[in-house]
Image (tube, rainbow, N blue to C red):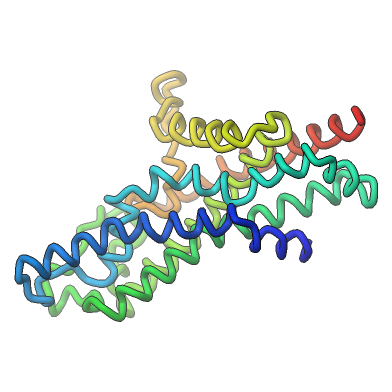
Length: 264
């Protein structure tokens, strides 16, 4: 899998997704910061570094572009591998199952990095520019989470470290899961545009709470693990849903690989 990772991190898709995530995060924080400067607002009355780090996720366009960036970062490369015949050659050298494990593992790591590393770099940038969150000193730094949210009492500890870490872990896990879903789509529909569009469509349909309107069963948002409404109950439910989605996606990917290799 090491060679697969090297190839994936060097690929144009990864860097485009990486750059897009970083720019989208800046789309909220930089615009706010420049606006506050032009308005002559004192730094003590501006948003904290934690607010600026998370603003693009909670209130900006990050979650809108998230499924597109994740699918593009790795799964689109699978289409090239299938069209070139490289997939069949690699499976013949090892086995279909080893190939699937390599693709799933590499895809999860690469996609997680494409989303999380920009978030970390963006958070570090604003930590060195804005004031760290201290609601006991600056009342406007307070974040009014619901009492059910797991960060309710701890969001400001160590300048927001629990929220930084929790968001990064949740984002990485979510990106990894959607990478596998995109891979499952790519093996059956080798079209780069559809490999991006179909997972995004599933993402938005899920996010629209279609399960509640159709089956009267409410499910947490696909971004539950890194949004501002994360509770213990939502976290457990989301993990169960993603475990099911992961198992189905790996199974679909394996069956697709076997079918395409047998058809050669």
